[in-house]
Length: 228
Image (cartoon, rainbow, N blue to C red; front, side, top):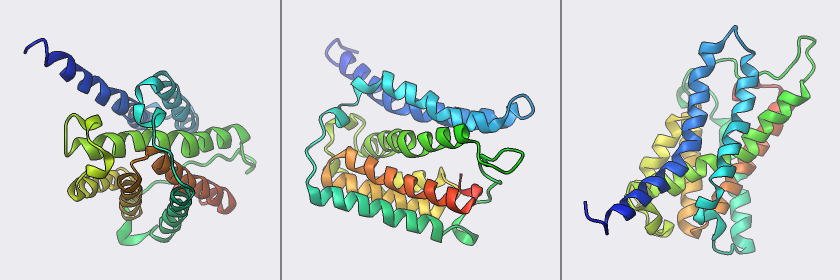
């Protein structure tokens, strides 16, 4: 490999790694959790993974040019992002059983033995759900995967130039990550469409955060813990 191509190739690998590593750490926590049952309260592992991923995102923040130099969004675009997030939330609690879901466990129950909520568990879970997961997943699924499908040097591809096929494939993969696969598919299409139309990953993150914030509030209000 020549000296002129090696640095660029290495940069592409590092650009990929900085966006994939937080997601990989999140998945690693999920994979390890069942093996630690009986040794530690698994709820703290589930709540703590958001903190661990947040640390990694902070360490890598200077590498996320698509966030630091995002185009200015118009009020109309912000409104569309917030509305999209709310619509996805509605889909999430609508398509929650039967053919539209995979089998699921009891979910994350943040209650104490006396039935009251544990404030620390709730706070950590909401921190991960609302602030960390949208940032982590949009960096991975939309900024990286959706563009990488069309071009390995993904940062050189404008979001608006990504193909419909890339949007569909990345959305299907995103859906398979979630127990409620159909709602996940709709969410992936919605956030991906928003990113393609605006070229602004911040809007996709904001939309995703709205979905998760509404979902978190709904879970706490209904105590339907399986959604967690």
